[in-house]
Image (tube, rainbow, N blue to C red):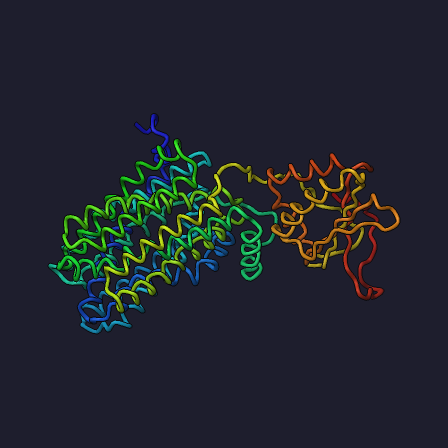
Length: 541
């Protein structure tokens, strides 16, 4: 079956198979813990917005700390990061269980523990998602992302119902203890994993500049910005369904903890169906059509959930909601991963999570406040309207197709030989490139240079400018700065094969001798002992 199903191809990889299986146990524990936390909050407070804040407290850290975690994922061994995150969550979950057994939990203390677990998730997610691209080949990456979603939602179909049973029989404290135990499986699998270490010819970026590079890359990548924006809208509007589900179980259908777990299980079961349906949808429709349709169906399901007063009907409408959730989230995730080169993929995924989970955190608070003022049913109706509006945004900012760009490193950079005794930290470096352009080709040249500017700044250039010679108007000079010599090398090594088209078209318009970079170092004053000339000839590429 593995040989004949592209959707199951990642399971041929033993590392992916082992980590995926161990992740199932961890996800099961996390979902049991979520049921315990959500239901415990309903027993220690009557405030609807505090109940909704349980969801917000677990998603807010992902918004706050994902970018730092993404920089860690791109700068340090990912296995080490994953182990640190899992052990941290194990310890926090164990402490939560101890406090719950001792009867010491207050609403704000419960939110504090769930916030701490969310911090572990924020550290874990970018490293794990970026590692998937290291474990499986690029062609299997969409299938691997869907399998991860399917595994999580497989547990979502079982975990909440099991969590409801555990809470009903042993109390929320027992659910927290089960979650602490579940982390041990993944910790063991990560301890046995021996990934291939990648050797870099460049020194590790400091965390501050690494975060800046990630922000710069995403802000100068139109496709990624569309995904971030759509993820923010989806997270903020769709989260009402999950954030208010404890109130749906308690107030709208007059249920208990077991009812809450059953409803969450229905959502997870629907998500499994969405994961299985995902490959067929991608074959028949483009990305925007899939997302827009999923948002509309999610809106219909949310509206029906707000109007329902029967357990069976609420569970029934949660099936398509779960399917639409996993279809949309996995499509966003794959689009980010396949629209980003490997050197910055952890930070891009982190920014995507910051946008999406930031929307979830804000949405959880918003819909909790609306429910507090107008009732849970009215909040769900308003959320459905927001989902329809989020779908309409696609008419203006359509989701891009993934995989259209070849983001493998271009690999043509050769380290320049300079005639000054410079250290890698010497700078700032100023780069100048002269182009000779016929007057008739100027409009086409300027259009290409606009894209060239975006590529340069995206990869780390500063103070980019295009100059025209006043004495020989056919001569144009591109100029930009980089902070140091090593940053100049880093800037050039970030160039991808898809960027090559731009420079080839510029070369076709250029009428002079072959294009060459003039590499200079900026100096205000030059002491006699500095920049001692060497006998090495200048050879700048």
